[in-house]
Image 1 (cartoon, rainbow, N blue to C red):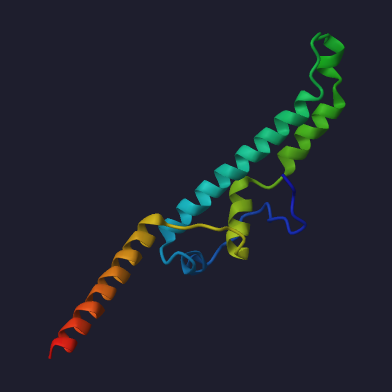
Image 2: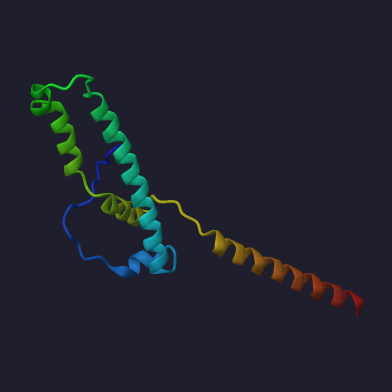
Length: 130
């Protein structure tokens, strides 16, 4: 997982809720999008962390290795200091970097378009018969 140069702030920020409902038209839908994206980010970070920790794994554990594996401790500290996935997802959403879609809304829009087309065809047929 690449850490962006424009990292989210690790402190609490009061946000304008109107900004969150602009893209989806519904604050609850936005929260669902952010939740799914933060889960994706957390999963990616977890995989990456486990890969890096596996590099330090040894088949024989000695007391010295358990207490003095400084590289592994530094890797873990780095990940602990990174912004939380929820903050990263929020930052991506506000910058417009998240692609999302709602299939239910798309189906409704398609049904509306089909209904409008059918009305236009029906009006055209009645105009031709007159």
